[in-house]
Amino acid sequence: MTTASASTRLPVTADKAWQLVGGFDSLPDWLPFIVNSEAMEGGRLRKLTTADGGVVIERLEAFDNAARTYTYSISEGPFPVTGYRATLQLESVGENETLVTWSGSFTPVGISDSEAEALFRGIYEGGLTALQANF
View 1 (tube, one colour):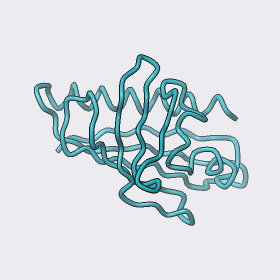
View 2 (view 1 turned 30 degrees about the vertical axis):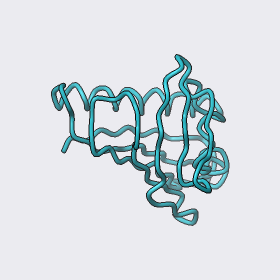
View 3 (view 1 turned 90 degrees about the vertical axis):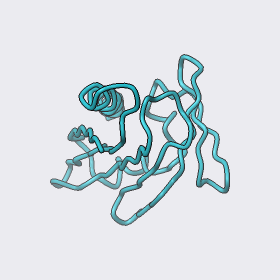
């Protein structure tokens, strides 16, 4: 199993940041390369459409509003991995500062561990940079 992660600090309270990112179906609100998110199965699945027309289907595996975290898996998508499972977590690290960590684990298929790690680290870093732009 290979892992990747990225983190950033936001200059707002964790509650304020969670209002933007805490909804499982809220990716288009802060992530520019996701142009649409369609909730399915009562909100347990999200069908994401990327800016280039790609489709990714993700399943919500765990959600903890009080801890400001959720975990999801990829059911269908264009990525060269299996067993993908990721977590988005927000932690208060000061009166007006939040640490956001996006991390995942997966098994590469047809590419090396380092290539898969770089792919997802790049996605996470790009996403967190886009998130910062909202604050």
